[in-house]
Image 1 (cartoon, helix red, strand yellow):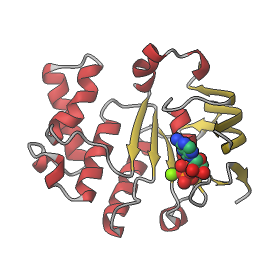
Image 2: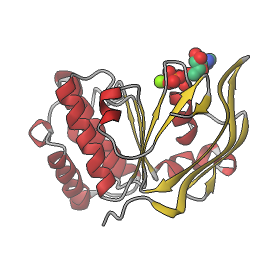
Image 3: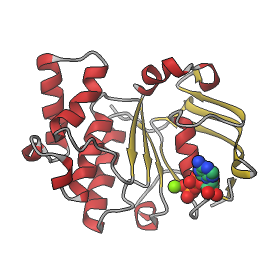
Image 4: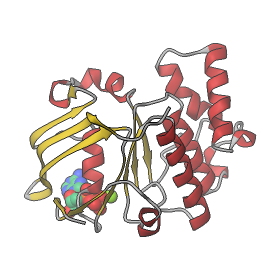
Length: 227
Ligand SMILES: Nc1ncnc2c1ncn2[C@@H]1O[C@H](COP(=O)(O)OP(=O)(O)O)[C@@H](O)[C@H]1O
Ligand SMILES: [Mg+2]
């Protein structure tokens, strides 16, 4: 049951985090706590550091300075070999979907469970259920390239949600979608939140943010500024 953000319980803690690329500071001294079951928007202009923040959280990059705790795990202690195991806590969604074009919709979603050792009827049931939840069950046997952008993103959301992750990270999830598809994706992310997930969305989509009741943080030049 969703009881809203649990303010005694921090699922993400970032302590004075900086990320440099050469002489470019993509993030500067970012300190933030994110509550369990919070629904957080990260906004700001292009180049502000939004994607960098998301990448650090899924260990697509490592910090240049500072520390990050995710669900009690200090990311500096996670070895390369341990990253797949760590990522089971997460569902990640990107602007360009990142589906595997040579696998069907069903197989794209099933893969998440298979690598977690869930096979057979349990896997089949869970994949069918999530495809139905995102409204794409009738396309289960198709390959991603024949689907519309909105449909592909629904598959990506299904893939992000099927393992029942504690945290959903989305980087510009509606960035390449028409307004109607964007609304559907936002609705699905809200439903994941209602089911108990912590949802963190990087976006510059002001329309989506204006419909949002929770917290929004704003990055400018790699720094958090007041909204
Ligand atoms: N892999 C990289 N190599 C060099 N510079 C990068 C890299 N990734 C991001 N940057 C730079 O870091 C800054 C923040 O980028 P990013 O996090 O993608 O911003 P946003 O998502 O808010 O548009 C930008 O100036 C960008 O050019
Ligand atoms: Mg970005």
